[in-house]
Amino acid sequence: MGNRDIAIATATEAAKVLEVAQAMVRIEQDGYTRIDPFKVAASAGIPVLLRPMDRLLGAFMREDSPGILINTLRSAGMIHMTCAHELGHFFMGHATAFDETIDYGAQAAQLEQEADWFGYHLLVPRRLLSIICRRKGWDKNSLQNPHVLYQMSLRLGISYRAAAWSLYRHKIFSYDVVQNLLSTSPAQIKAALLQSVPMADATKEVWLLDEHDRSSVLEPRPDDVMVVRLPSHASAGYLWQPDSINQLESEGFALAPLPASEVGLDQLSFGADSTMDYMIQGGRLGFDSPIPINLSESRPWEGKQQHDSTFTSHAHFEPIVDGLSREAKQALLLEVSGS
Image (cartoon, rainbow, N blue to C red; front, side, top):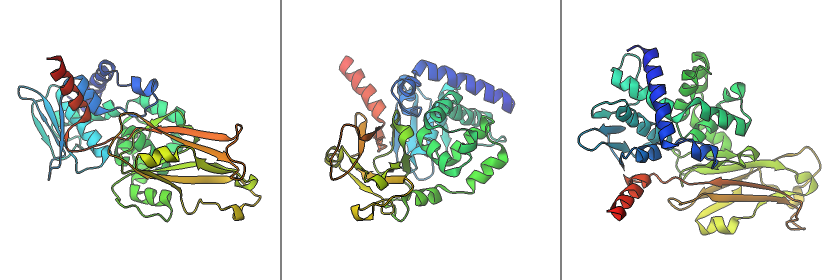
């Protein structure tokens, strides 16, 4: 089977899987931004076990009862892509497979090429790209900005590198554009977002939220950092302040202005409007439902007024811990309770 045939066959199968699993419902109706491969696996009755491993990224076991094994010592994007790759082995009818990489080239065995292509088609369907771009106001040109592509990768739940190559596979980017994008590293992008604030763990991600995220439910990991960037009318005495700080703090989160964005009352002056950045970090391992992020722009000496501008978005933190995935545990509980 040639590359074109593999691409068509895996795209067709991935589309069927997405339809059966109703994977797009949470995106189109609930405001989420990514395909969840753990939920897809659970809908097909495939348990996913997560554990630290030295070399393997993941494995698919066909045997009597199919299952997937995923290495937790990787970024969230790599974990999601690995799970999608192993699902490719299952849905494409492959036997047991062990993967130390999921970036297989055209010279690899056909079964690995099929799993590779299936994984990309599952997590990055063109329909999903269109939805995210419409929400964020992005187009082909803006996606060629490394900072924009990095934020796209987070919303898709895949790595920055995988996002670049997925747009190449969709024929949105040329090979040269991808190579140019990959010359900028996620570490450089994260450092620019956090300005002078060091990251405790450089392997975690930095999410940038703005007014275009009002209708979205984002899914960072608990240790990721979120930066909320909003228009600032400090020249008129307005400052953005959190409405839900007590709720966030009760859940273990800290919210504070980034140093370069903080504006004191004695520093207010007339001039061009700018933006205000807030950083949110910390928190518990996971939540059963999205947590609201509420901010209001008001004059501190007046307090919150009815006409003040507000911002609300939601974050549903995704725990990736050793053991059965959350979805596999829920399926097991349902099976036990029904027996």
